[in-house]
Image (cartoon, rainbow, N blue to C red):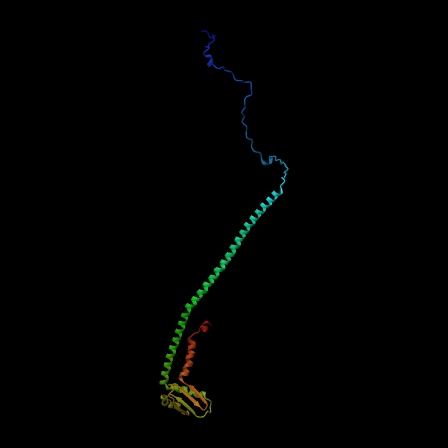
Length: 249
């Protein structure tokens, strides 16, 4: 077979063959280009243009104005009410706090007064017991001293002689005759001690040993043991027993 001999295709196979057409290179093809991102320019390099536009307000009807005013009034009233409530709560809190402090202070003062009263009640019995004990001790001292003095006066006649001389010094001169009343048991022991004294001794059973009563005309000197000892005991009580007034001073 020769190379130049054409290939024959059967007619039955021609239906499965599609014609091939060369591409059209004459038209414009889409071109894809990569665009580089331009860095942002500084702010000062940007030109800003201000466009002035006129704004025209829409005409409002009377009803719309009333609605706007009513809404503004309601908003103002709500804000004022909220502010007033806040101020009222703050004021009420401060007033309540002050009232609470005053009530608490009043309760504290009342408790302190009650406590002072209880302390005073507790101290009074102790003070009373202390005063009673002091008085009992002083009375005991006085009784012991009185018993000692009486025993000494009944046995020591010299004490009575000194009392007689003291009584004579109390009388003014030139009173006339003198009489001396003493206990009956002490008449005989006392006579030698009187010496030249012009005294008329008279026994008196009502007088205790150591007591004497000197009489001359209208003058009378009483040296009874009970009276003299009572004066000494009173001075002793004043020194030993301290009253609340004297102790506070």
